[in-house]
Image 1 (cartoon, rainbow, N blue to C red):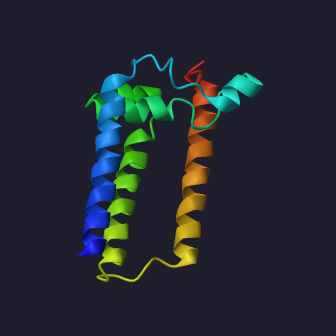
Image 2: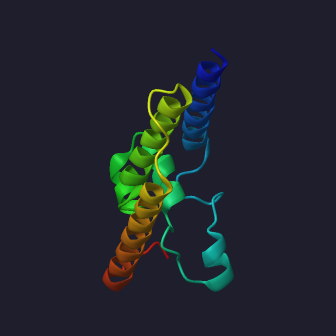
Image 3: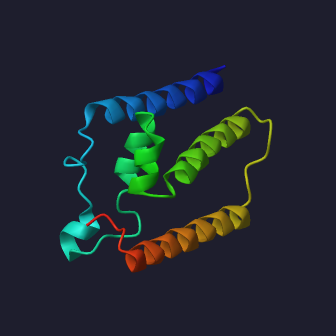
Length: 127
């Protein structure tokens, strides 16, 4: 029973915090600076992702996609990871293997870098 409460509580806190932040922060992202951009002056591969996820939290899918085209994928992966965590906590499925996690992380990194290069070449990075 404690595992279920922990799983449900963690999900409620994460989801509630995401919605609260999405509704409370200004849409121009002035309160969410990119540390890489602040230090180097160059937008990082994830630049715009925080603002895009907050836009998705507000229900503005168009703005989310405009800020970062991978934001729906990242949001979906986060939700699936939470569900998988719950399935593992309840003992309904074994935890994923380290190899599977490493492959997924590497695929995400390659996809993120590829989108960054394409956005840089197309001039659509959030400067």
